[in-house]
Image 1 (cartoon, rainbow, N blue to C red):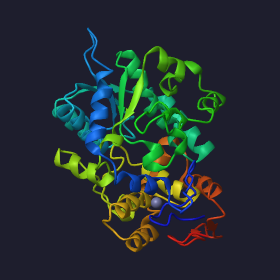
Image 2: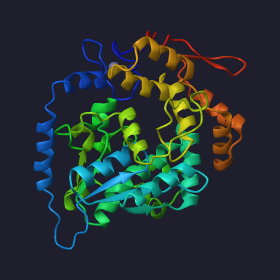
Image 3: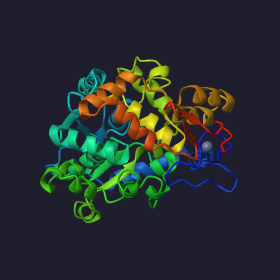
Length: 376
Ligand SMILES: [Zn+2]
């Protein structure tokens, strides 16, 4: 395990390759951003938008997938107020056991800001069954739900005949998932190759006894369907010079976004602005940490280090203290929902711990072998 020489990204992130100088893809990208002509990019976006004029009978210029969180709030307002477009916001709604009150408030906030929002709610019994299966099989409950989340937007784009899909972050450039890179920095049609969406997406669901007819919300439209409907995903993050977790959070909070109140000790959410619509992501981030050696705090501090707002040493301190943060009540409510005991939850987590990076002690505690910022 090696760390990026600039931030605290280890090379254990799936699909990632560091530069010859030891920089992670996100730092490398950030370095190159410093010489970008943002006005030129804005003009490229204007030209691009010309290729997607609203056709007769079409009510919207574009569709944006939203969760109601910081990124979606920022995107929606920018697209409407700066670009002058009329977007349809598409939101995948979680079952009542999962969604947070603040998540519901944040969607209400978007509606109150004047947007048209279409909600899609996959059948709750299948949702729960898949989440349980996903956890037991991959120790990652979000495999199925992320598929639904990503699939809902192109599915709704086809249904509403809106070819232009605006997406926020480019996971290739901004996170380092290199398989998703398209022809250009803004082409998002390779999003289908991202780690979450690849790898025999539906087969494990069928094997788990779920019928094909119940899996429609989890099917990402094929390249042929994209072509037939002229769908184009465009990453807006590529056009926004100050796109970052913290900036989007501050911007959206000023526009009425409700943030997480629980502490960083309980959530690893340093500023309380990520994944606001539900809380079980906290335990998934903890599991990600045990699998790959980086969690939610790492994602935060990496951006902050790049932006020069904290030092790498301060980042090491924060990551060392809180990267595995997850309060027991999040685990308890998740276990209750999928019908698993907390002991069984931990047995599964321990089985998927990366033994090169961590020691599982006889008393069950999981301790780091590597040093944050240095590696192994
Ligand atoms: Zn880096």
